[in-house]
Each structure stands twice: as structure tokens, then as C-alpha cells.
Picture 1 (spheres, helix red, strand yellow):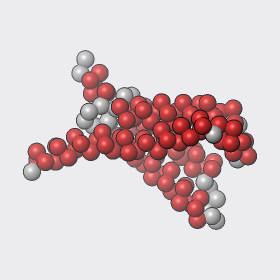
Picture 2: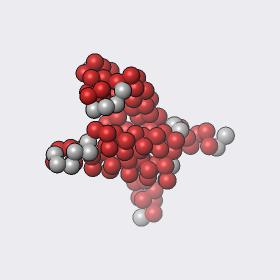
Picture 3: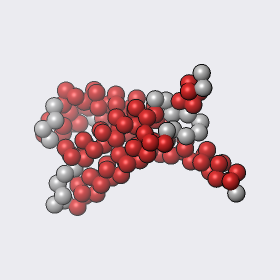
Length: 133
């Protein structure tokens, strides 16, 4: 039984990292392809649109780092903060049920990233290769 748990943990870690980070990868790519619209939305919400390149870099590069298990704790901490900040800036209209759901989605994602901060990347991560050298 212990062997099954180990196998399950080894498979769950990289799959979990990919699933958790994929939303940011896709979101970053969408922001690239709809740059002007995203920049306008940010400005309309009171967030300077000139920050969009930083947001795109964090989402795309950060998600790839999480997927690969590279600099996992640091990147997960940054993405957790980003998730909480975007929830507060863009989804805090609790009178709108969809915005409340989006707010809670961001908070749940932040929780997942904080688990990576606490537990590390798990199996099949580049962090594991550099930690032993």
C-alpha cells in the first residue's frame, strides 16, 4: 500500500503543477493576442494598462516555471499574490454572482499555490535536480 501512495504522489505532483499553472499560461497567451482590449479593461478598472507586459510575463513565464518545477516556491508565492491581488482588483463585486465565483476561484488558486510554497514541487521537478548538486 505504501508503494501505491508513493506512486500516486509522484504522478500527482507534476500533473497537479500543470493543471494549476495551465490557467495562467492560457490567460497570458490570450492577453498577448488581445493586447489592446486587455489594456483597455485594465485602465477601465483603475489598473495602469502599462503594467500589462509585466502581467503577461508573470503569467506565461511563471506558469511554465511551475509546470517544470523550476524555482517553484518563489514562483508559486508570486502567483499566489497575483491571484489574490487580481481577485481584489477585478472580482470584488460581491453583488454579482459571477464576480463572486471568479473571486473565490482566484482565492482557491492562491491556496493551491501556497500549498506548493509549503510542500515544494514534488516529483519530476527541475528544483529536485538542482537541490542535489
